[in-house]
Image (tube, rainbow, N blue to C red; front, side, top):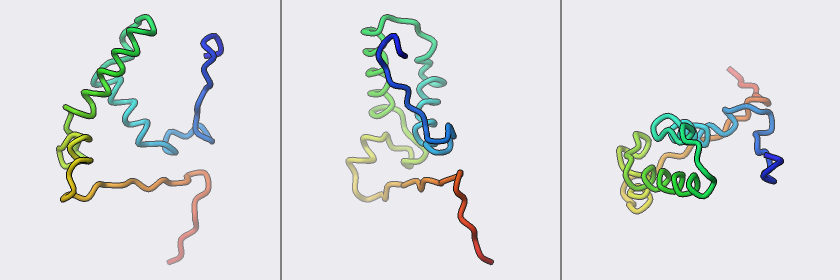
Amino acid sequence: LKKCNLKCSMTQNSDPYENAVAERVNGILKQEFMIDAYHLELSLMKKLVAEVINKYNQIRPHWSNYMLTPNKMHLQSSIKMKTYKTKNRSNPKATSV
């Protein structure tokens, strides 16, 4: 990362649950589209990632979007979009019974 002047970005406590949606997307890109299997020059890798993101948003249906693609989900207005609450696992709140 230092060689390419890239800044390392991690969650505050290195807990993948702090950003579970992003972790899920990263997993899909690696497992379904196998983007980590290619060892390409940076310019080719950028094109590959752009193509995969386009397919992810335009072609791949998502269970969380009622089997619509993300783009179709954002363009429609009749189905309510699911939202995800963030959990602060490092600071659990007490619950009363």
